[in-house]
Structure formats: structure tokens, C-alpha cells
Image (cartoon, rainbow, N blue to C red):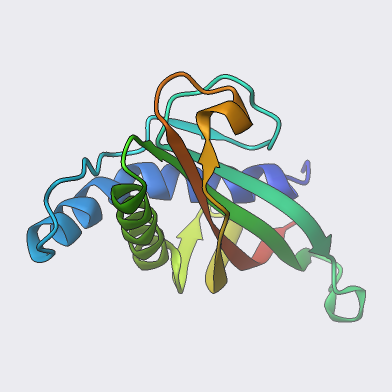
Length: 168
């Protein structure tokens, strides 16, 4: 059996976000008072950082390392820890509304991902996602990033620790 490791991990996370983010966004929007900003389902998802053309909001699910935990490995399975950065990029013409968008997407992604257990369709891969922390980028202007769609761009990044268990 071929080992699937990181590819399956990031695809499980992407698919889980796609399936669940809409309802969480709706819930957050209905409960918060600031309604002047658009808060929509992410348009695109990527597994690498170096995308130059994309539509926002965009989600980047980028692995940064994997620890195979050799001391815990048994002959018929892998029990690894995968570190992933899950980043959403947002744009707006108003810098205050941009900040609100960033806060809301961070809250939505944290709700969707923290402590979630996901299993591949064949049951051979199981992952458990933990959201460890979040970081906010500086605000970029269109001239900083070459964007013509909005005046300001901002990134919110969640650090994920993912326990990856795989039958081999």
C-alpha cells in the first residue's frame, strides 16, 4: 500500500473547511453587530504559498514539517505529527473593515478546525487537528502586493498540529 502522508492530510483539511465554513460564517455573521463588511465563503484553496494570481478570500494550507516519531512507530502503521500553516488572505477598501474580516475568518477557521478528527474515505488515514495559535500579518496596500482589486490586503494564519495516523 502506498503511503499518503502529507497529501492526504492537507486534502482532508481542505475538504473539511470547504464543507463546513459556510455554516460557521453564517453563524458568526448573524451574531455580530458590524454588518458593513462582506464575509463570504473562501473562493480558492492552495497547498503552496507562491500563488501570484488568486481571488480573495483565499485559503492556503501549507505544510511546514513532519515528525515521523520513529520511537513510536510500529510495523504496520505510521503515527506522525504534521505542522501546517492555514492562512486566509482577505482584501477590502476600508482598513477597519479589513481587520474585522481577518478577525472573523480567524474565528471561523478556528471553530471549523480545532480538535476535529477526520478520516479518509477508505479508513486507512485518520488525522486529529489542533489549532495551536494564530498570527496576523501587517496590512499591505495595493502598491505593496501589486493588487488592483482592493486597497488593502491582510493575512491571518493559524498554526496547526496534526496527528496523522496511517495504516501501512
